Every structure is written in C-alpha cells, then in structure tokens.
Image 1 (cartoon, rainbow, N blue to C red):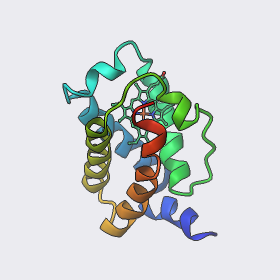
Image 2 (cartoon, rainbow, N blue to C red):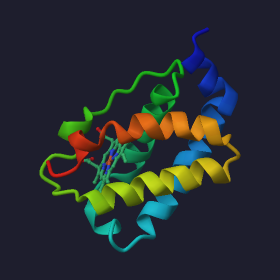
Image 3 (cartoon, rainbow, N blue to C red):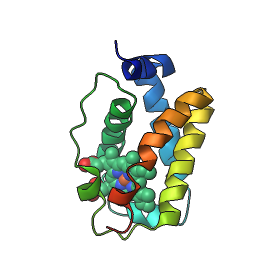
Length: 121
Ligand code: HEM
C-alpha cells in the first residue's frame, strides 16, 4: 500500500468521502457568490464525479471518469476569490467529518495546485 492509498483508507474510505462531498456542496450552494456558477448543472453527476475526484486525490482505488480540471471549468470566468471560497468549504467539510489536520493539509495542497487550471479559464 502506498502512503496515499493509506490516506484514503485512513480518512474512512468511500463513506467518509461521500459525507465530505455532501457537506462540501451544501456549503458551496449556500454561498450566493458561488451558487450561480452551478445554475443548470446536473448536481447528481457533479456529486458523483467529485466523490471520485476526491477519492483519487486521497490515493483511493477509485478512477475518476469526469472531465479534466481545465475542461470542466472552461469559460466560467472563475475568480481567485471563488476558488478560495471553494477550497475553504472543502477544508471545512473535511474538518467537520473528523479528518486530521495534517491529512487535510495533504489534500488541500493538491487542490491548491489545480488553481491555474480552474481560475480565469
Ligand atoms: C477548488 C478546487 C476545485 C475542484 C477540485 C473542482 C472539481 C470539480 C470536478 C471533479 C468537477 C466534475 C467535472 C465533471 O463532471 O466532468 C467539477 C465541475 C464543476 N465545477 Fe469545480 N472544482 C473546483 C473549483 C471550482 C470553482 C471555484 C467553481 C466555481 C465557482 C467550480 C465550478 C464547477 C462547475 C460549475 C462544475 C460543473 C461543470 C459541468 O458539469 O459542466 N469548481 N469541479
């Protein structure tokens, strides 16, 4: 088992990631600055892709079959502020579900690395 596979297992596997993603989108959709970006989007498909994506980021044995990050966010004019809010809500959702601070850091570091694919495309 690699270190990152144990991160997925350590945080509680599929059930934990589903709970995190559910809390995450509750926060995102409750934010009036973010909600309009998701107008007309199939939220069920979004949720299931996000579960796959976060599982893969945590090194889980799950394959992500959504669009790559640049394609998924193309033409949306996502601002740095919007990106920071989304990253904050992911952090809060991880905290709320009992993920340890250093494991949150590992996950958020990887997400932060995606900023240039997501912002301003
Ligand atoms: C912070 C890091 C972010 C990550 C890891 C992330 C991840 C994802 C993933 C995995 C998808 C699914 C792609 C697919 O279904 O093919 C997605 C879609 C989407 N994301 Fe993000 N995202 C991030 C930030 C943002 C931000 C800041 C916004 C806007 C404020 C945003 C808005 C959207 C929208 C509207 C979709 C739906 C695209 C569609 O189905 O056409 N995302 N994102």
